[in-house]
Image (cartoon, rainbow, N blue to C red):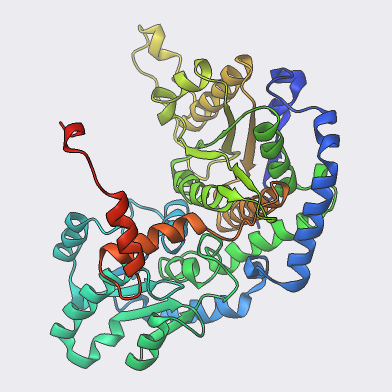
Length: 462
């Protein structure tokens, strides 16, 4: 059983990074009404179970069904390919990167490929590199009509039918809405195995649903322990005092530093390659939930921090120069691993070279921790506010804690901003314009809009 993750925000204090950059007790007092209202909203979600992401940590029966199914197909296939985009893909990638061993070939464990884009060169290359007979495809779309995913699905279905005829359905698993949508009706008609995305769970909050759990179970991840970690965080975050609640405090600090200290960019920087894709998953969660034109009353607000991902120590050599000396408009969150499950000692060598020999006798883990500490110190010295989420070790339990903490913090931040953190009208507009460009019936008016807007002047093309 993994220990608790912790949230250290000492370097966010005004006493440490200055009044213009850090928070004070007065700053928190000034938003207490908003905090109280946000606490009530989260409590309302818990009581109603809507939005349903708060119930996912307790969905053990669903996890058991998924595990049984995953065990039954694991030895049949060499490849498990997810067809999905956005919330139907990023969680799968994050879990796989964090909790599997990429350089080890495990007997009886399929390779996971997540086709999260419609780049034709990549998609065709994937098809050329796999054996269809040894591959199963998991098509994931809540709406059942996502253009990117369904275009991939049509191609795969056609290829499988040529090889297998009517038996092709054994190579298709659908994860979609429990009642409605085109993929639902197609799956029932064709007889695919179906897993349900809870009706009140949106894509970017769905990683702990069958959306993320199925590929995780197939690749050998302990999904029960993943949910146990999320449940542990949910129970911790039922604490109404924000000073004892990591998700609430995470949201409050981001809100204060954004609105009161002009920190319009949120940088997440894990010091772990295995956690780098959690930063990618978080980027969608934060951006799509909080970037809004209108508040809940319909007023014009234009809110939302811009999330940026970075990776330590890699991006010390590509981004930290900007972070330390560039515009002081960012809030940094490091994700550190207290104890690595694997480490290696740096042996003696080049003892006549003092600029190198000092490394001997230390471990790579020690160096990694020193790099992380040095970066936080450099930012703090430059009056750049930062905080650190510490994970005891990389395990299913600790990753479950982290994912759920960030989901709950995002919802809480939305309520502080007085916007709806669960809709995405900007994304929907882009989808409608795509439908119009591709000739989908019912979007003729959007086609007319495009014709009025899309009139480039040749004089400005060189």
